[in-house]
Image 1 (cartoon, rainbow, N blue to C red):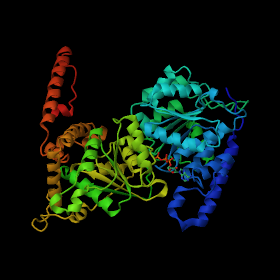
Image 2: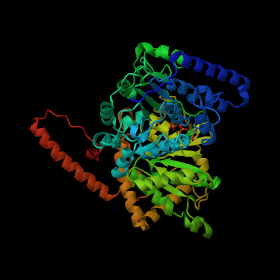
Image 3: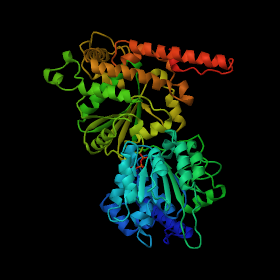
Image 4: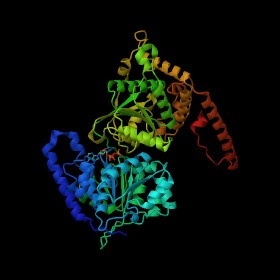
Length: 612
Ligand SMILES: Nc1ncnc2c1ncn2[C@@H]1O[C@H](COP(=O)(O)OP(=O)(O)OP(=O)(O)O)[C@@H](O)[C@H]1O
C-alpha cells in the first residue's frame, strides 16, 4: 500500500474553509450588485486558498482558463481534500467535474514517492455514458499536463477489449469507466492492478442507477471492497474515499450512498432533501457536525431541483397532429433569426432521431410559397447531427466531437446526451418528446445556460399532457407558455385571408406545411420507412412511462391517426397494426397457457400492445 502523508487534519480543513468563506463573503459584500449571476456562480477566492498545489492552480488557470473556483468547487474541494466521503448536489454546469478531479490530482502528485504505472489504478471515476467518459478523460488530460507521471485512461462499452486490456496492463493511475465494461475487466483482466484504489467517484450517480447498473455497481464494490473506512490511523495511512455527485441527487441514490459512503459530508443538499434534520452545508464544521451523528445518507423523494437562474424555460402546447409542423417552424425561425447557433432537440427513441434527421436533412419545404432560390435550399438551413445509443461507437465519437467544436449546428438526440455533456455555447434545448421524470428534464435543459451563460428551453406538450407542468412544479420547476400562434402567423400561406384562424391544427401555415411534408414522405420511400419505424417505437416509448407519469402520458388517450400525422404519415401504418396484432395474439396464447397451469392464480398485467 502506498503511503500518503499530506493529509490535512479536520481542524485545519475547517479553518481553511472558514477563511475561504469569510473571504468570499467579504468580497461579495463589496461587489454586491455588480454582477448578480457571476456571484451566484463563482466564489470570491482563488484555487490556491482552497489548499490545492500551486502547479495545479497554474494548470487550472493557464490550460483550462479558470481564474476563480465556482461556488461548489470552493465549498467541496477543501472537504474532499480532508479525505471525507462526500455527496455533492449542485446545478448543471457549475463545475462538478473539476470539483472531484482537482483534489484527487492534488493528493496523487503529493505522494512521497512518485507513483508508477506499475502501481495500477488509484482513482476510479464511474460515469453512465461513453460520451461522458470521454469528456472526463479529456478534462483529466488537460489537468495532468504538468503531472506526466499520473496517467489518465478510460474504458467503456463499444471500445475494443484487447486495446483496453493492453492499456490496463501498462497501468492507468486515474481511470474513467462505464460500469458494465469496468466490471468485465475487474473479472477478466488479470493484469488490471487495483490494490491501491483510493477513490471511487460516481459522477451522475442517480443516472447510473436509473440505467439499471445497480447490480453491476454492487458487484464492483464487492470486488473493490465496499467502503473501507477512511482511516486516519497513526501512520497516516489512507484507505478509501468515495464520492457521489449529481445535479439531481434523489432518494434513488440512498442505497448506493449507504453501501458506498462512510459517514459522508453532504454538500448542496437542503432541508427538503434530507432527513431527519440535516442542514445545508454552510461550512465544513456544520457539515461534519450535522452528519456525524447519523452517518447515513437519507434523501427524501420530495426533491426541489436547482436550475440555472438565467435559464429561460418555456413550454408549447401543440395538438399531436401538428407537432412536426410546429417543430420545423420553431427550428426554421431560430436558424433564420440567428444562423450561427447550437440547438439540441431531444427525442424519446433512436428511431425518432433517425427519422427526423433524415427528414430535416432532405426536406426543402413548400414549393408554391417559395422563391426558386428558397426551394433549392433546405427548409431548415443548418448543419444537422444525430446522436443515440444504437449508433456505432466511432460515429458517436465523431458526432460528439463535431457538436463540441461546431459554431452552428442542430443536434438531434436521445437522452444519451442529457447527462453531463458540456457542449460549449448551446443556445436552446428543445424537448420534442417529453422527458420521463423531472430529473431528466433538469439534465436535458442543463445542456444550455451553463456556468452563468444565457440559454432557452422549450418543452413540447400535447393538450392532454399539460399535467406534466404540475409534476415539474412539484420539483420547483416553473415554465411559461411560448406564444406559438404569433410565430406561425409570421410565416406566409397561400390560404392566408381565406380562412379564419380557429386552432393550431387549422392554421393556414400548419395545413400547408403538413401537406407538403406528407407529399415528401409519400415520394421518399426510405424516409417513409424510417417514419413508420419511428411511429412504432414512439408509441411503445409512450406506453413505457412509469409511476405517476403513467396517469399523465396515457397511451389510450392518443389518437393514433394524429400520431401518424406527426411523422408526416397520412395514415397509421398498416404494418404497425399487423405487428401489434401478431404480438397481441402470441402474448394471449402464452398467457392462456400460464393461466391454465396456475389455475387462474396469476393476475395478468396488460400492456399497450394488448390494448390496441
Ligand atoms: N472554475 C471555473 N471557472 C471557469 N470555468 C469553469 C470552472 N469550473 C468549471 N468550468 C467550466 O464549466 C463548464 C461546466 O463544468 P462541468 O461540466 O464540470 O459542470 P457540471 O456541474 O458537471 O455539469 P453537469 O451537471 O451538467 O454534468 C465546463 O465547460 C467547465 O470547463
